[in-house]
Amino acid sequence: MLDEPFSKLDAALRAQLRPWVFAHVRERRIPVVLVTHDEQDVADPQRVVHLRAATEESPSHV
Image (tube, rainbow, N blue to C red; front, side, top):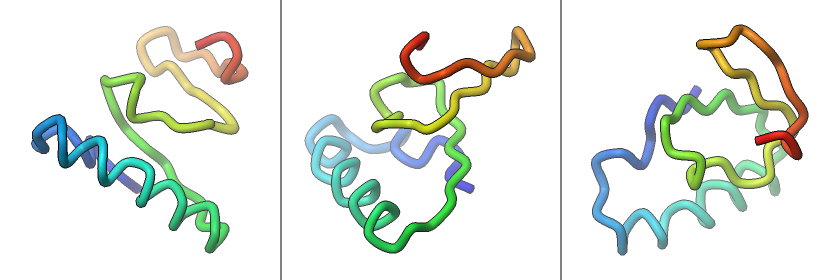
């Protein structure tokens, strides 16, 4: 579970780490639950769950 993993990073470090983290996750086929308020943190999600509305949507609806 990644809970706001990039929220405390400055923009330059965030831009550098996001691709690295998601490449690592994809290469190793690691299931991840990512909690975030920043839609930019979500890279190519398979499913998206909006907790406020308690609905699950396909990534194309985000």
